[in-house]
Image 1: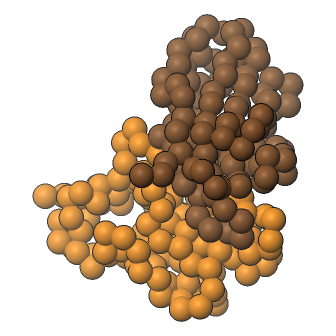
Image 2: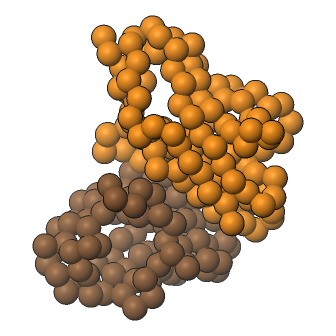
Length: 113
Length: 115
């Protein structure tokens, strides 16, 4: 059963600490998305990769957020330093070329205190 | 730039009644349109999608949606609501241009089913 796997599922951290969230896309998928979900803003696209290359990270605060794909089986989203306003659920999704649907992971619920 | 507007952040219907969730989109190119469902503490699951071809699209769990270009709408319907349909529903749009697969989501509609 192919699925997008995100770790950790939950993370509580203190303000100022570094947070790394990981995503394993579905094997064979070549597009990866990071979304952030909050009550106030809804679902926001943070970053978008195609064939491991970043295509769009305009939705991501550049000063503290970074997204990478070290290889085709791993995508990471890092926040350094974390702030309370970063508290949200972060979703990774993967897909194939040409606008087929994105398959979502179960998310990482981040709480920054 | 593309955008999605979902009318009604909360919708309540009685079990067995018609479900209608509204979605209007804006896109500068022919759009691809999606409905996703999110159950509590879960990720988003695709219900149905429109890319090209038939404008009435059928999805999982008895849902369907109709693409109406003249109205820039893609409303989601189900003839008879079931208790298990209680969830949050998101409409999304992406450009049909190659290499621009990112989805832009609406703010969501929380569907409550009244027994």
